[in-house]
Image (cartoon, rainbow, N blue to C red; front, top):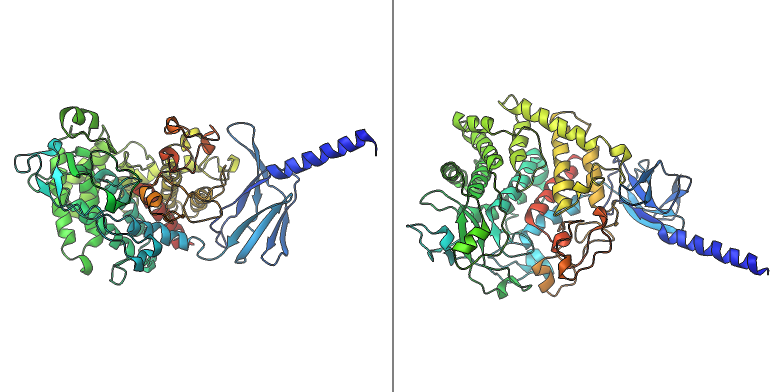
Length: 571
């Protein structure tokens, strides 16, 4: 054989193999609903590449080509959008492209298992009680952090509750990868789940996730929320109404099980943001739990404590939580999560909104009107005005309803404007600002929830699809092909920054945990971690040490519960 011909043949074969190796097929790995838009994003092909979809018997059910090219905003990667929405029959399928294949499923209730797992996660992270085998299986564990002997930190001392005063503050959820409990984030998390519950009550009443309270007459979501609300009630000083910012150890615990932790726990400094957030969520919960027979008396207690917390916050408008300053002044130093915030106007607006909707007291309406936002912003724990805005959006003929709907429409229209040109056929993922700490929840889930509100209350049918597109991104149709929820999909995180999952000796982490996701800040790389890419949508490490990209948190899982539950309810 001619040597030059042989060399050319070998080069051609090498290029062919290389091309096959670069083909990457990205789909929602959890499942598609029969009538849902279905798209894949494929790398390593061109506009004329043939795509084949086969059913579980290996029979071809679709032959198609890409509908458009989608170039990455970063670098030179070219991706192609493949539409297979015509496949509606429930079944398991495989998409085959140039020798590569990717499994996906079409079925009714496609997200139901994920919805259950996301909510069940909150049972698994309960503080102060044994997690029982009957409900948790292999994840059962003995109780830790009973929190019946919590000390008042000197930063929170008053005449009636001096330094070292002992209080009992049990229950609640572990906040994130750590074992502490923070009012600001707890209030936000509960609120997000209650908002979705209010819009999908029949669905959540049917959603049984097998927790100890499942046999009562209350929806499991509300039972789980109540477990945290009972802790929150103990975080208010009954003498003046102020709310402690957090219950914490001085330093983060090591990666050990809760029952092995030894540090003393404290309630630390009252803050204006914690007090407003407490007032808001207690007022919100009081409306929802009113006349609930399983929790008789809670609504009245929650309203009373909300009013007191609001009054304290108004009297202490500059009581912001400043951990560095407190550590200089008080001992022991506290070095755990801060949830610091130097502006309480958004918390005031949210609290005033919730208290007005509960009490119909015109003074709260005036406060809400005087502090209402000028534009709708994505809800986060540190920017909660939109939690109040969504309450107004969902009301009819109320004072601020139309203004808040106008703001939400402008926000929603801007979010969906360029989906047709996007890299992953979604409102999320084409701007550097989409990525960062907790982006899968704060920039992917929460905007999707806002879109569902816009679809329901502003323009039916316009925004629902785009909320689903964000879910598709989170569940696998993304740059790295990760389903960012543990225990779901073919490629999901195995090593989250989560103490129990690391210390319990079980290979698989708790299922149903949403990790933070790609974070180009890479704030943890100084600890020896090596990210494989600096691109915003690829700055992720499935490594226990990557707290910047792979931690879990209750606010992120609350967003997951709210979004996936709403989508499952409507589809």
